Length: 341
Image 1 (cartoon, rainbow, N blue to C red):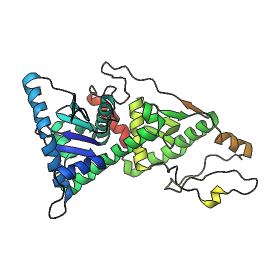
Image 2: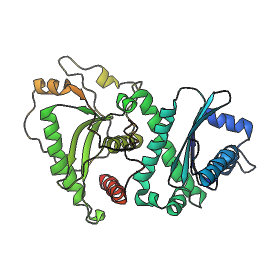
Image 3: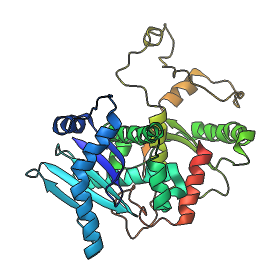
Image 4: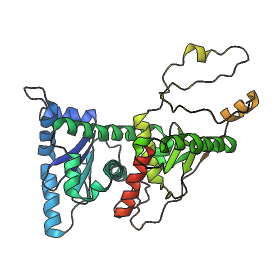
């Protein structure tokens, strides 16, 4: 049972995400459907009722004492609550299955904060604007925004359970010198030039571009004046890409034509077709079967990029500098996201 919540000081729900187990408990305790069958307002009301005492007590302690609690357990230790203030917003994470520790829940709050920074940019520096953007007045627009972040959190939790790089907070890279060099050349001469030449971009040029194999980095291109990306930046981008284009399930059956190669043929699984940029291939040399086999058996190297020093670091890539981002850093981060996509 898990739940993540963003609330204002006035105990207004700005965003929530909950797994099916938490929603089932909410149904049993409050009921979440009205006569019209509209679930969103009733779910918000139920969550407001459930968390309002905690949010109000936290705001009161901050006002009277200048400090408040950040973690506590309830229901005889079965439920763990972690709270963190980002600006004037209170972030709350709840776990009722005992599978997450305090560090796990706090990391999830930092992940959510970084996702909001990536999506809203400088808006996150102004609490009034942030409230308005995260909780629009129109219910359809609010459902769209909340659905976006709910999907990202769902993808993050899935990756933490299934993917090594997200479990240990490291960027996993595939190393094959010849292939990486060709891919970087392709990114620079074909992809980047094509995107920069798009008139709809109004002069905004690509700062970073990369090629992925699932969540593993194959090639990375940066422009000459680009600032370096921190591990948390790359993990955030990987998370966004995986949410937009999920990796093929391991349980998905392989097509018969690919599962049963003919005699003397290489057993290659073709990627599924997707929308691609109409460019000509930059590679005109012939490739032998030996070279193909070498590319398929390329070695993997696992590494974590060196983290920038931070006095507030808690040993997690996601928390690095999250509370002390300057306006220029947020602006540059927002610009990188826009240029990437």
